[in-house]
Amino acid sequence: MLTECPHCGKRLKIEDALAGQQRLCPACQSVFTVPPTPAGQSSPGGTGTKPVPSEPEPGVPGATAAGTRATPPPLPASARRRPGPAPAGREGAGRALDTLEARGVLEGVLSALSGTMSLTKLAFFAAGAAATALVVACLLWAAGRANPSVAAVILFLGLVGAAGMLFGVLPGGLAYLEHARRQGRPTGMADAIGFCGRRFHSLFGAVLLWLAAFAVLNGLMSLLNTSGEAASFVAALLFLPQFAVNLLLAVAVLLGVLLPCAIAVEGRGVFAAVPLVVRLVRHRTLQVLLHVVLTLFLLSILTTLTAGLGQLALLPTAATNSPSATGLPGLAHLGELLTAPVGAGMGTAGSMGTGSGGDLIRVVSLAIAALMLASLPAVYWVVSFTGYYDRFRLSGRD
Image (cartoon, rainbow, N blue to C red):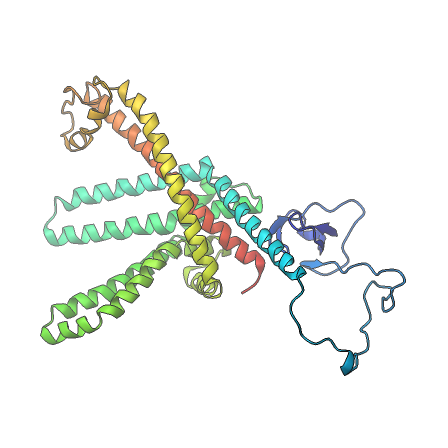
């Protein structure tokens, strides 16, 4: 069937089976949804998205009946055009292309914001983060009652588990939900949990790769520094290389979200997704870095906005739930409440309530509200990179 790109107006020939799917315009590189096939119109053979050749102009020599121009005979050497300055019209074409690229960036930002404002994604991340925090709290409680060697192992397992969940498993579930939204497939929290269960080893392993590289490098340098004067001198010579590798690992933290996104979008394991992410970063280094900078800038604005709104909502809520004038002094007793023995009263002046049961409910409610507000920037970070990787995948270019 024949259609037009809604961004640049280029006429395209698209296979009927692709109706309703997202494709990339070969002219302006913008993603658009293929409209339904009009009645009585079908595309003859071929797959993909191709520009439609211009119709032949009547009376123009060299035009064939099929609408394509015959190859003209070669010009003599005296009539060939010598290379000269580019015509002024190309500058206008370059500005038009820049406008199209800027429009694509703006549409990507708006699409990411639209995908972030999803109760399913926010609830999924908040529930996963709360479950992770609960498990870590239990491990900390157990470590405080064990001997030092066992406590060190428990703390290490808690650190690795929390990092794997917050930076691998939960972003993978969010990327799965966002990719399904972009494809128009209805999904829910149960689908995201099922995906995380099927790909748990890959999503968790993506974080373990970074942790292993960081631990091996810095652990080896620490061992050299404590192995004698000669080894310490070798470690000093390797200070700058160590700094450079740690800098690359720090950049990998920012780009690490691309790995769960690739696992969710491609439906592959971690070892198959790593080369895809490396290819993206290697061929589009500048674009990836610009996307990181833009996303960090918008993330800071979103974080400031949510923190301000949360504070505005907390002031009247705390004031009406505390005997103090503003309610803020009661917040200072949250640590005391959390560490108090079970059943101990917290009904002193300035605390948030007059009974341990009410205080506990207020603390849990405050934690849930804070977690939901903190989930918004985290979800936006994952959704933004999922959309970027999805556009790279649809482009089909290295």
